[in-house]
Length: 288
Length: 265
Image 1 (cartoon, helix red, strand yellow):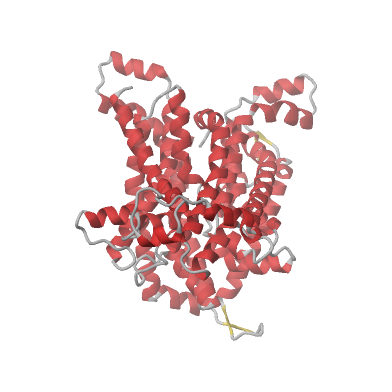
Image 2 (cartoon, rainbow over the protein chains, first blue to last red):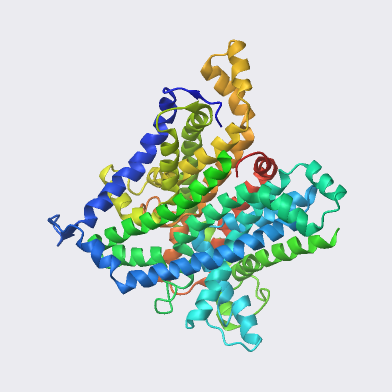
């Protein structure tokens, strides 16, 4: 890391990226900041409101409920997808044609447009004509994700696990493949048990890719919108209304620009803060 | 076959179930879908697919989607290449902060940006064009491409650059003739991820288009809401959206396996 040469001209290499991203990020973000401190009654007439919208959002039950739902959802899917993904990566073949077969099939859910994922799971989980819904009901369990909040949560989480576990598998698999064979041979000579091999050889080597996997899954699940929106529409009631769905309802549904903008900034700030914590931890590891 | 191989097989079968169900639905008539529960189509029909392939309001959606995904992948990878090179080789004022700032854009929830984007792209007269969606998707794809490519490039020893200069290569010639071929696997992986995240994103794509550049995913949403409950048609359109992705994975499968092993992701 430290054998880089100091060269201020490197800025020119980065200029195109900065221009494009700044156009896309800074201008819209300023628009949001602008809205977040003003009140409008249409006709492009604005009144300065200061931090009123921020206070309103931070004190509203609706925001607390959405944030809590979001945190719970993210925690659950991380707790399922990461261990499951590592477990599957450990059992995958090491070489040969089967590697390609596994990779191609496992990557498929990742490349399906998100609304199709939602629509697919909707059809799959319908209680009367969907394979999943029909089977669960045939087992004698009353299941209807459009009416029961628990069933809606169960379906949403199952959908996300189906959709994204493969990403963790692919990353963990890449990490495992980068461990030199000599490590395993040494472990064999020492007579290490499979668990010891996992704990002291594979897991430390996986740390780096797993941090990336967790960071990516955290960011994406925290922004989840399309899949639950198509699957449940945020319902029944508000039970699966996650942060983005709530925000879109406020911004485009009710056109409450001020509060929506204030909520956007708070939302962005939360993602940023949590991601920053992950990122610094990751970089600290790398520097060592 | 060892006994551990049972786990990947079960996992893949579980992954295929919902996809099978979607394909199954796409070959059924509306009557059969709503009338009964059946594991395979009893009245096999191609009607849903015929509708999609003959109705311009359907198939243009695929072209629109492919257009912005293609433009976006091209832009993202080509501007990310020099930037990633700079991050992996040089130290300069603000490099670390800049890198994190880029990553923060990958963290920005699209829902936050939907409305400002609508206004921004209307203001520059790009609203309802594939280019608008392609540029908007740069928000999260450029940081990702830089991140991935930087990982790959850091894995290439600096001696490669130095030897080339000693041999009398100018920088542009070195970059195009030697460096880019060396990092080809990384470019493949970066392009794959750009394709993937642009192809699957809907919120921004839907917000930034109305008629002319409507992506296929948005057309499906419209069908679901306006023309009743045409599940068969919806399933057929959904099945067709899986095909480009499957193609891309098939072609890059070796790159991915190799790329995954070499680089950061």
